[in-house]
Length: 242
Image 1 (spheres, rainbow, N blue to C red):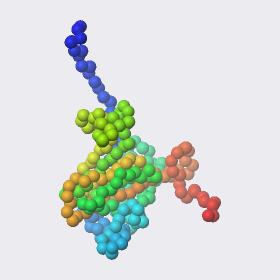
Image 2 (tube, rainbow, N blue to C red):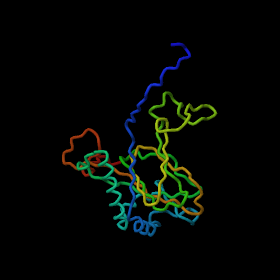
Image 3 (tube, rainbow, N blue to C red):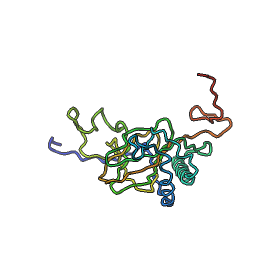
Image 4 (cartoon, rainbow, N blue to C red):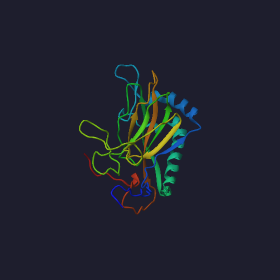
């Protein structure tokens, strides 16, 4: 064999290990849920300091939408979706109670986006799309770096200090995945997964309105024999009087 002879290209089989699960559900009761939600919307927002318009969000102080009895039917639906998600993971949910602990309204317009963040104090998170104008923002899930990145920066976007080595984006070199979502859709995902919104187009004077929430899985056994997890809050005690 001479130096000019080419070796045959070896066959390659790639195993995709440890996928991250983001579940999607479509609601057939959306019309009724949206009507109730829009009626109750002012009760779960604060008035802008200018006196005009409403402000929502996780840091608005309005984080208990799930305690509104008018929304009970929706949160039963959300809980069923969360239970189904756990079933897909083959998680034994008979040992835990699914607790929705925090819920809030996220509303964005042409001038605002939701920055990348995570809900690491919870176990699972969900988002339901109540109002989605045409060209409304998509959701982007992110990880710090692809597990396949051979060294820091190899799969990053090119900057004036770093040159990306990626010729074409795919699932093996990406650290971001954009999901196009639509009205009446609910997503469930691990709370530690970073996410934010990305602009897809002009929505005019309309708003993209979503209802988001966080979930804790709490052991429901009388004598849970586990080293990790969340135990029944009824057994908690506080002895400090600070």
